[in-house]
Image 1 (cartoon, rainbow, N blue to C red):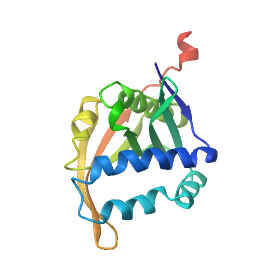
Image 2 (cartoon, helix red, strand yellow):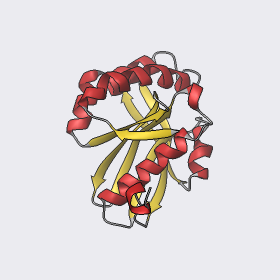
Image 3 (tube, rainbow, N blue to C red):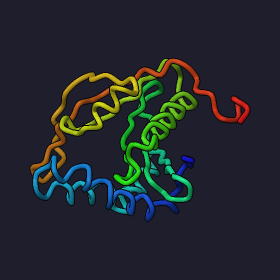
Length: 176
């Protein structure tokens, strides 16, 4: 059974612990030496996570039974534009539907928070095997970018998009 709950500042140590496992596992083979530690500090220091939350990034944490196994972060950038900043599942839980549930949570968040239709965007490394997952979830490659992030490092990404046109029903609305 997979459950997802909205995170609070109290969950920053948990988000950091999850990231310390999944982020290197995802990127060490794709990025130049030194970029993973640089990005971990940039995106996952306690200070950075607090700032993200204060600036409107909403985090959700996924659990398989009682074990935390993934997380997502989504930010509303304009009335009809949302950016799925982070969506990660621990390697041991990949292939079990956790990513799909997190993705659906992001769509539900967009549906509930914005004026529809709305666009949900996501940066994904062009070499990341998750590109296929996002395509299966209905996203498309909108553009290709190379983003300088400091220390001579770049994020070589696709910007993927999904148009959210309908209100997602919550479990309460469906009666379970």
